[in-house]
Image (cartoon, rainbow, N blue to C red; front, top):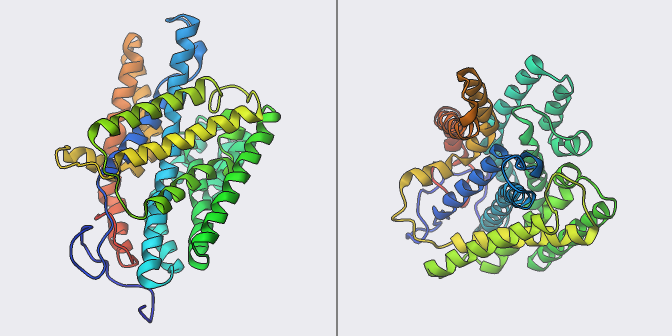
Length: 391
C-alpha cells in the first residue's frame, strides 16, 4: 500500500490489458445509462394518468398505456441500481488492490463528478423559481443544495420547476455518504448484513406506507429507505458476480429484457407500485418494489459482457453524457413546449414536444459535458485508484 497522500495519476488502461493496476471500464454499461435516461424521458414526455388517454382510447387500453408510461419511471431506479453496482465494484477492487478504501479520494471524485453540473442545475431552478414561482421553490432548491431534496418532496410534493427532478441526486448523495465507510471498515459478511438490513428497512417502510395508503407517486417514491432497496440490488449484484461478465448469447439477453418489461408492467398495473394514486396495501407495495428491483438487476445482468463493437459510437457517447441528459431533460421539454405553443400546431404538439425536447436536451448535455464537466473529470483522474471510464 502506498504511503503519503492518497492522490496519484490515473492509469489509462482498458480492462484486460497488462499493467499493475488495470482499469475497469465496460462500455456496454454506457448503453444501459442511455436506456435508463430514455425511459425517464419517455415517462416525463408521456401522460401518466389513464384519464389523459381516455379521450382517444377505451378505459382498458387507457389504463394499460398509463401503466406503460409509469413503468418507464423505473429508469430512475435503474440509474440507482447501476450506480450502486459500479461504485461497489470499484470499491471492492480498490480494497483488494490497496488493502483499504481511500474515503477522502472517493468523496473528492464524487464531488468533482456530481457537483459542478448539479450546482448549475440548482442555479437554473432558482432562476426559474424567481421568474415563474412559486416562492416555495426557493426553499425547494435550498433543500436540494443540502441534499435533503427528497425529504422536502415527500412533504410538499412535486413542482412545475424544470429542475424539480433533482431530488433524486439527494438520495444518491445519501448513499455515497454511508457506503464507502461500510466498505472500508467491514468485511464481506458485514457488508452482507448491512444489505440485509437495508432490504428489511425498505420493506418495513413500504409495508407501513402501504397500510397507511400513502401516495405512491410522492410519499413512497421519494422516500430514502424505499429507494435504498435499489442500491442494495446493485451492491448484491456486484458481490455475486465478483467482477465477472455473464456469458450470455443474444437470445438470452433479449429474453431477459422482455421478462423485465413484463415484470415492471405487472409491478405497476397489478401492484400500483408507482402510479398516480394511493397505495392499496403494504403487501402490494412490497411485491411491486421487489419486482422493480428484480427488473433492474435483470437489465444490468443482461447487458454486462455484451459485445458493443458493432454499436454506433454515438450511443456510447450519449451514455457517457447521460448525467447531463438527465439534468437538462425537463428544461429541454419546457423549451420545446414554448416553441410549439408559439407555432400553433396543436395536432402535432405531443410528438413535436417530445422530439424537439430530446434534441434540446442532447444539445445542452453535449455543451455541458464539453465545457463544464470534462475539465472536472480530468481533475478527478488524479484521485482515482481504480481507473474506470475514460473522459
